[in-house]
Length: 144
Image 1 (tube, rainbow, N blue to C red):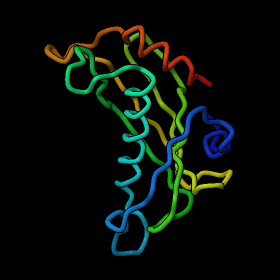
Image 2 (image 1 turned 135 degrees about the vertical axis):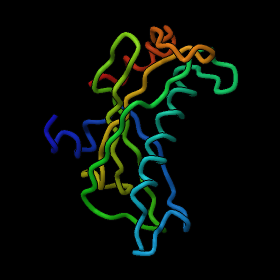
Image 3 (image 1 turned 180 degrees about the vertical axis):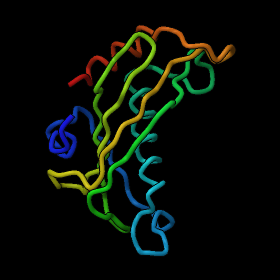
């Protein structure tokens, strides 16, 4: 996917607000790179809980991250309000690739963008399984 498609606000289906915290900043005065992954993870799981009906404590099938990436275009820092854009780039039988982006609130171009791949597994056996129907239906709404 071309970078400009990953950077544009209009190319995401769902958004979640993130308020930066003092502890997010590093010694250099901007949000530390690893914190972006936390923002990605928070938005993805919030969507799965709210729209896919995932119960974190009792779900028999869970999504585990098997790969991730992030490209940083411009710095963000505390105190800024951000949005995490979320979409589905690929939906397979037992896996999904999310496209994610961090936007400064009100901005049309992402400060950072990347992806997560979840493989859905049986919680007890850790073996991959088909994506449950309710989760799949929620993920289909995010497909670009």
